Amino acid sequence: MSFLVKICGVTRPEDAAFAAAKGARAIGLNFWRGSKRFVEDPQAREILSALPEGVLRIGVFVNAHPLVVTETLAELGLDMIQLHGDEKVGSWNEIPNSQLVRAVRVYDEASLKEALGWEPSLFIYDAHTPSFGGAGVTAPWGLIAGAARHPFLLAGGLTPENVAAAIETVRPDGVDVSTGVESSPGIKDRRLLADFIERALAAGQALQATG
Image 1 (cartoon, helix red, strand yellow):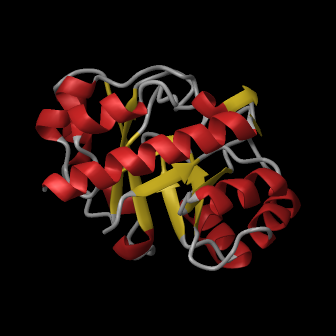
Image 2 (tube, one colour):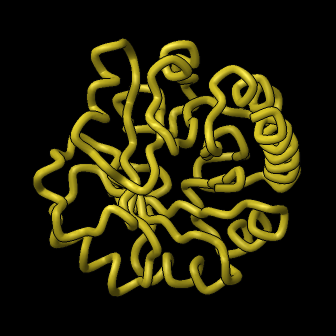
């Protein structure tokens, strides 16, 4: 896969369109009501309608009932669903692995075992926070670099200033950002967005060129 930049916690159509225009290939919409970036279905439809073809539409869920997730997947025409809570692998047989993204919240070596048993299309390795992501906390790069399962995105505390170093250290297949490109929760800053995407893609291309 080519290096993937995912912009998560998008709450406005104009932010989604701008990110896609700058080279982001995945947009995350948060359907967890506990998030500051939570979107209702009508708002999600507006955001999704602003995206061009070829950009992955990913719904983010935390400890939701599988039926709620599958209904949202179908009704909104999402490409993938991201499980970011304490979900257990056996409850998600109705969703094809090709449409599944599994987030692993890492704080020590034992927490990395969360990935065992899952066979999603994509993993996301994030920092472990009470808010289930979106807190701007940097993930433990060293632990992830030595134990991550591919393909995976690196998340957690990424910014335009540290994303190149993160990619060089962890060697992910892509990156996932929310807080690091915002002026306030859910409101993306265009300058930060453009800078982050440019630096991430450049570092990702350099990584893939070296194998």
